[in-house]
Length: 269
Ligand code: ADP
Image 1 (cartoon, rainbow, N blue to C red):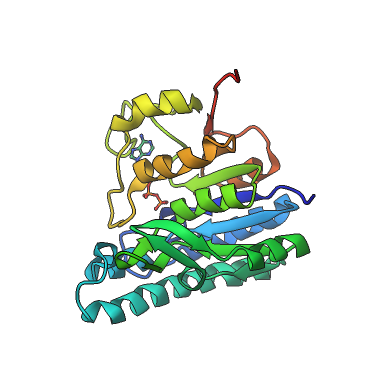
Image 2: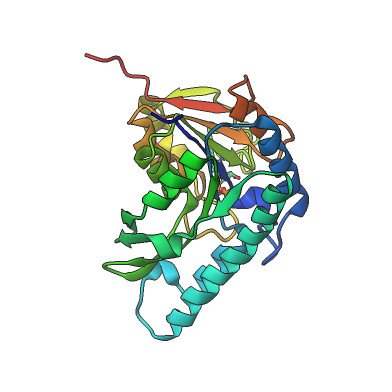
């Protein structure tokens, strides 16, 4: 049996300037590549978000609304293209730090049904992990068996990959220190929750919100809803601030780090 992989998500808000279209944060991308390289994780899958690349284009063509007009077909292509542009900045940084990263494009290996993953080609991913590669996926425009197409969030991908590939842990790299009692960008009295169980998370849901900037896939609330599926299967999830130097490194090493740990937290029997 192989080593259980860690699934690391780099949020779109972390690796791009979410307010400026098509603007990568190259400093953040390079620093994160250095942290990932230094952590020397034996089995790792990376997923990144769309930030100011995928979301504005997807919104313009209403890709999340599904296929209703032929003009959206080119919009699908443009959304995917925008994501491959961001992805290539990430790939270049990772490989320059000697991380054997290989990009895996969700648009060509995932089909959703009403927005939920129903088919995912796992064989290449499993083989890559076995050989020591680091597969890199991202939120993307994908084909959908009911709607024609849809946007697949990086967050849904993270949970699905973690479950299907038997991950040991999920690390969500965000632009805030973790999960707060309410949106820390709007509420100065919000405080960080360092540990939460699924049960406690359910009662907090009404205080967690979507994203401020253009984001077609739902902010912190969307993230929590997705990771719930993995946590239910006992995959521990930690949210850390990936804009702060060293936090992703510590999380990858399993060291104590500022952030939020979410666990199933139920007693068996
Ligand atoms: P990304 O694009 O990096 O995946 P998002 O911008 O979609 O991340 O979601 C993260 C944002 O969710 C944070 O920047 C924060 O403003 C917002 N948010 C809303 N409610 C909360 C909460 N209770 N705790 C933490 N963040 C929250």
